[in-house]
Length: 371
Image 1: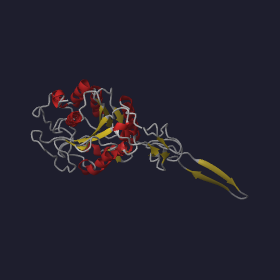
Image 2: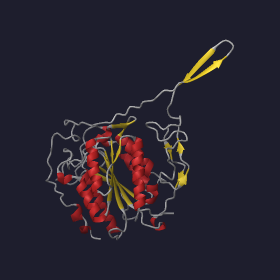
Image 3: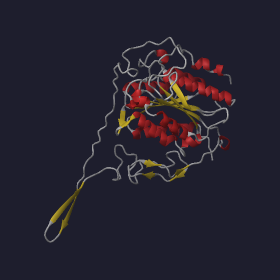
Image 4: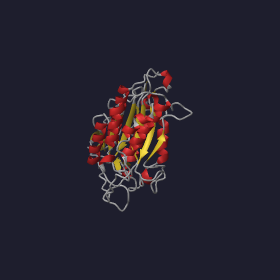
């Protein structure tokens, strides 16, 4: 299929000179004011006193134990499990073929005992779906989200769990990774962001691809995404300013990757399912990262809508951090991308639940039925 069949549609409206810079915007410079709404979660723990009276010939002694917490069998704030209580989760529920799920002493899930194979695509009944993880690399991702962890840390921990070896997506999909920020000089090609050493160029970086000229498909490559996120590290080494949220640029890059894949494998429209998963904490900005939700030409919903309407390429959206403006923009993006509404997560557990739900929908759309 010729790239020209889709590019004019996907890239319609892209105009490097159509952007209005608003000096009141949040993310780009330390001299600008950023109001980063962080959700502070207060854990209220009810202390239960267990009183035991020991009677001897001379003394009555009362001993008091206080709790509860991890180990009491009740799943509380910040816990994914507790003892034998897995909140209905199992290896199969999490997308594995089988095995034994374990709850650690820290009340987190240990899937090392879960099993699944790594089948190459010719062994499968149907083509594997090609899934692009589109991860927000703006500096607002360094805001605290849950249990003292930043949004970036919570997101990368969750992706390690859901994309790592033996996960359903790792074994049954081809995975790619795009990180995105903003382009400080959209008129110039090859632009980097000052003080960013993670490799963003022209607003994004494709860290992991589905294939190359030597390998038709990178099978079971979830660990490559986990490694790439670890190498990139936190945006701007944990800084609070410097990188914006040009979401549309990442979606255009994803569309281009899809065209390259279809051309390289001589695939027609609809022969393989393609899916985008956007993880973000902030409202989208223009190209240079200075203006939230403007200009209208840079609304990523436009690009997601073109992808869905022309090729049924769905865009799932997960918004972390609890910012209402970001959640509203995420809903608009998800509607345009054919997935209804964005998932919202203000805790690590809510993010886990969102990723499980998205994985389930992808499995319904395109289960390759690999051995």
